[in-house]
Amino acid sequence: MHFEGVVKKMTTEFSSEVNYFIEFDNSYIHLNQFLEKSLTIKCVGYSCLSCSNDGEIFRQGFCKRCFFESPLAGDWIIKPELSKAHLNIADRDLDYEKKIQLQPHIVYLSNTGSVKVGITRKTQVPHRWIDQGAHEAIEIIETPNRFLAGTAEVALKKYMSDKTNWRKMLKNERDNTNLLSFKEQARTYIPSNLLHYFNENSKVFNINFPVKKYPLKPNSIKLKKDSDYSGKLVGIKGQYLIFEDDSVLNYRAHEGHIFMIRIES
Image 1 (cartoon, rainbow, N blue to C red):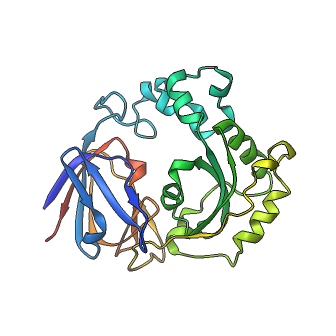
Image 2 (cartoon, rainbow, N blue to C red):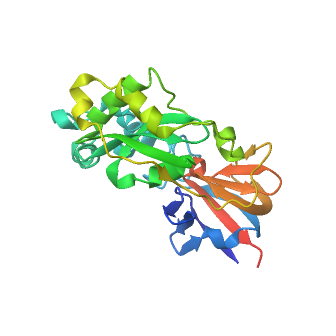
């Protein structure tokens, strides 16, 4: 069987083991059922996630023009402390920015092998943690908007990492850490004007991924137009597909690419 469509990040469903789905225009693929099956993935073209331009993707699924003009790619997405919708100031599209920025946000600690700090919209819990490949996470504070969460994250980043070591995450190497202790430590770094948002009652959230075999030496695959890869799928973690030969493919990093996926029956 084969499927074809524009790559967007895999959607997920939290369960005893995370369920992963690939959504194309005419297909909805439950990827877990194809573990230990041979897949061939070929990039057959491009389609910008904003304008559908078929030129090569520039960044984050967008062509170059849309990356610098679309409200879906504003700087405040990567740097939430730059959010201004709460001041009624537009970046690229105030209506869109209000919709996203002026809703509850969570500042959290996640453990992807090492502990990192991050923020996400409350509606994206636990999917954000799943996307990062975190096997556990805990909420620190809940704020009413993105700017306040970004301000807290900036303060915490002075003392804690905000990056995921993707190799360590995929190899399932784990530091011996206690997230509850890290949460209490984080409390001392949060600006005093934000401490009333501290979540006293949050608990550690655990996540299990559908992985049959972790790679010993992950080798990242990057597909461009007319290139392909074939291998046996042995795991899915974060937004990565893991193959038997230790190759890994960051599916989300290929947003805006058009993939043809063939699966051996």
